[in-house]
Length: 347
Image 1 (cartoon, rainbow, N blue to C red):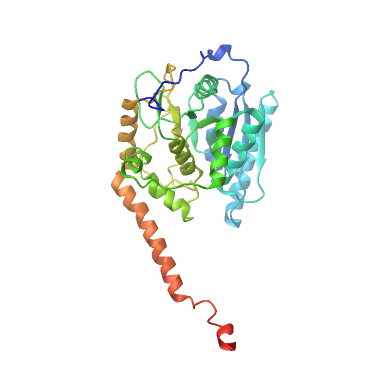
Image 2 (cartoon, rainbow, N blue to C red; image 1 turned 30 degrees about the horizontal axis):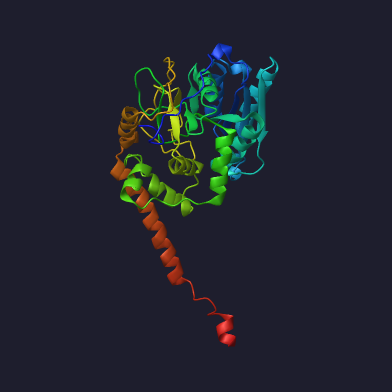
């Protein structure tokens, strides 16, 4: 299915990785209070082809409380050691440390904006992602190939499923190892600041927004609107849906998530192993065209994510909304009416 249902958007011919000379990858790595995870992430990144030619920017968020302080200091030490080691051999690595805690959502929005303004793009990793040896090759190749294609919002290094041979497009976004361009990120930030995120009410549009009811994005958006979650990613997904944009996914995952051990801010512990990083070869699609078969494959994987089901996941999110409403109602009922204290007595 073509993205605009009218025509396929062709792109200019892509250069091979060895022929590309006009793009130096800018890679952002976000860390908080997991020094061991960050060490593994950076070690694996340093083994990727093209690492020596990339610009690596490590962003460490500040502690939420005194409890976090020692782990944050250890995390900073890991980042600084990595910076010093690589700077000695001429590899560009920088470390930015926040004195206060901004949270992952605002940290990503701010840092990606900075990188896009300076470099025209950004490759984004978090401190629990191990990349394959060809992760940077893949990112560089497709950032160049689709930089003039406004319908492509994102290049994903993660794949929910495994397919044969080709990278392909699907109408959803990802937060596990991805990249985007400055023009598309700027457009997203403008939409985010406007705050016009209306949950689709029509049945067909709601089903499409939930990626054929494979994940309850609509309930997640409600949780975000009520301040019960802090997610830039749900806004990114909404932006892609609203503008009819897509993401390029590799045939097999080029990242492995090691954060499902209960240590992450937004990841619960899980018995499920994340997809293993793959060094499988990938081939460029000939045009920007959604792959219906790939979308069905991803939907199947999402419906069984972490051993749960779509319905169970949806009910769990809705339960949080109901608890929030009941809590607010109880608070209103217990609070005295406005003007019922001194003003009422004095009147």
